[in-house]
Length: 295
Image 1 (cartoon, rainbow, N blue to C red):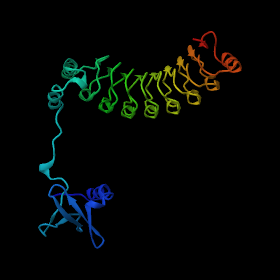
Image 2 (cartoon, one colour):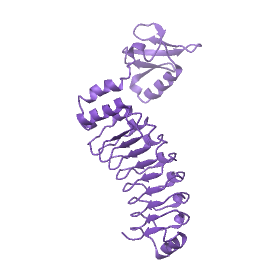
Image 3 (cartoon, rainbow, N blue to C red):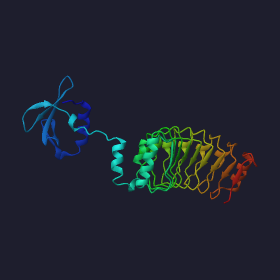
Image 4 (cartoon, rainbow, N blue to C red):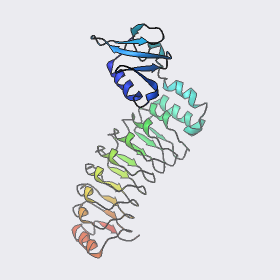
């Protein structure tokens, strides 16, 4: 049997909180092995091998946590597909699964799954050629199947039940991303997506914009109807041409003074004083920049 010392460490950590599963001989613990239904005393040799003394057989033998025969092979995408079609509802139904399979078989680079009542996007993990993916208006909450779709440049997640966007942090080729009408509050996973030119996070729960500070390629940024008050992280986004900030808690507009490429700026439904409005109108190149103070 084969084993590594690291497994012993994780074994001790995972079981240390469960006192009923441990027996002690002097200062050394015995661990209960569910596979053999036996108590084992573990001991390491100088060559790195781990030996286990069995309470039932009173014999020593080389110890392994997982036997080769116990390793469960990871099913292929095709094998999983056969399981998915047995219960297709979470994936949008049989016709949606067939659409996804067809896209995979053809090696398609785009797929539109708008309004398909999808809650589980696991089948999409196999579509590694995708550059454009539309998932507008579904019931998606778990984005982890998208982690490996590194060729994506356009991703539309508008109107879903998403709160965790960490699976997107490695999609560095994204240029357009829509997270409008979701439940996200933390946009820190977007901090390294420096190829983004369009980002839409309209009507969500965000309040902290510092993760956007390095996204210098942004030209279109939609942040309307959130809980934003501090615009400082936007001061360096000099390529912005369209910026939506209406329906927030903004009162200080000074970070926007240097955004001279803006052509459209919406600021209605904020707590902005007359002096702040005058300051910004003097700073920006009117009439090239249209500022919407009112809806």
